[in-house]
Image: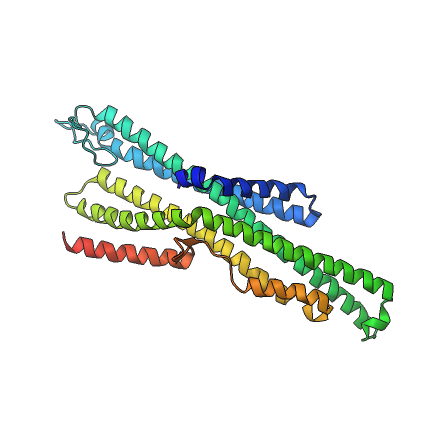
Length: 334
């Protein structure tokens, strides 16, 4: 993921980052600025939570190998307990004799691997949340137009005049229609920009997601088999290592699916907001712009894994079920 993100797809990443910079510099309205700040805060919170969870899982994964040395100090036996590493590797030397140096090596490589995962994933959070923010701004503009029309109609009803054309002066009505037309054109442009951002995201991460899903599917199944195999004889350190490794994989996969689901929901909400914007009270010229949004927003923006698998919470549950099925098959051969 890191190699693809910073080599083959660096131009798409730069374009998205440049788009974020432009969106903050175009002098948005007060409400749009509030939406930008709100979604940026959400993205920051998600980054902190995700980094904290993976780092905690990393610490637990590394420190499980310290159970035997700590027990030798707290509850000493006549002999030294067998010491193990976070993962089984053949270094070509005696593990028990050089355990400390081998533990330092495995801990360093594990830390580098997790940091290499966290970095691109935080970039994924930033880009995805900003795409969701663009959809939210489009929804705000559509709802603002709907509120303006609704307010105008309610004023007419309160004055017992059901003919809007007779109640409002011609000049004021023309000015209001021009404002609505300008807002609708901005909605169409912003909606296209949001879709373009999602297309770039799809181009960057589609094959990365396919590799991640395939590896997680295999690794979770094998780790579950290792966990069961260490129940007899009972091995605390080995079981704890497998549990932490499985939890780390599930957190990673769930987080990727959660962001993709959030993006899918935000793009779908645009269609609902467009339907509820009192489009039937607008002139035909403005309705033509609304039709463009309606047609495109019928198809929600999705992030795919290799153009075969939709990233969503529903499919995350499907992956878990498939992993358990593979685990059952592998465990039956023990």
